[in-house]
Length: 468
Ligand code: ASP
Ligand code: MG
Image (cartoon, rainbow, N blue to C red):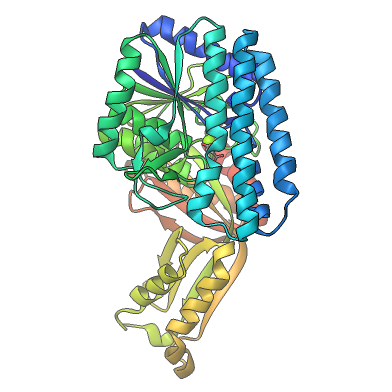
């Protein structure tokens, strides 16, 4: 059994949806079993829905109506392209209209109330997936497949952390099996909405932006599937972002841990939580290109493939380095704990931490948007120490980026760090701070944002990653 997920660009138009139906037909033929197909919204649709809801909440009664029209046109055009049966197409257009009326009505209420809760936003933001699965299932019928849409609100039971909900696996497993296995056994392709779920009481939730990848691995684990295939618009996981390093290559295979590091540090191939369900169940994951379905893509699994060099380099931008400095911190227990509690209270998450052994500085890296609130929280926490001069200052430097060098074999390969540093030194790039992840799979360097692209290219070249 295979679970396949197609992302926004892979369902970005009627042609692309017809292509999804073709890939589904091929997979059914090759494996002898219909795959479970998980879809995200057509590209750009979720952004539009969020904009509709937010502008409505701010009192704007025009934008959501315009967006509704645009969405109607986009989906009708897709239907015209990929649904051949006129009867089906007519029914589908009516269904799209009904769903978009519903959107308009809710936005109208949001405008009247002048308020938008995370819970309200989740009800609206999953509409793109609900529209998309209907069209894709009809496109599959047009190509002679048997297909049925399934709303993930029936399958994925989550907590009530709206906007970023987590699945409850026991309940979800029972529902996934009860709902999907009979369809598969009857030769019917279940076409499931990604991104969304519902609480045990049936209140709609979402799994976070880009969450359809996660939906696919959740369902994959619950079935359980033999493999999960994530269809994207690139040839798999690459050694670096090809927009920065044109000679970047596709990695034929990579371990779960390496994938998780790469995903976290900005290789936007997969939603960061995607790996969790499949790692626990040891289900291989493939990242494939829907425009080149015969390309083998990247296999993500338990095995660590030994490469002479490193696996990949990613970068994460728009960060700030915050440092808390002071001679009075020396040997005083609890300072770090208080710093990080203050950060946590401000709701920010930390990407990297370093402390010098002299204990006179604690440095950590945050997203720049979070920085003002964090600095304020720390200033408040250490008001007394700052007054007494035990802490000299809380300092933030913006416009920095992290370059992350990833390889699970790094602990056994001497000299990696030295080669990374010399590659940067040769280009005159200054390293502001260094950390090695506790997993040791990841060497993270902080550099000025202006240096990041050149730095990534220099490291790529140093390890001859264009030849892997
Ligand atoms: N459509 C959702 C988003 O744009 C989920 C996804 O694309 O995976 O975030
Ligand atoms: Mg995505």
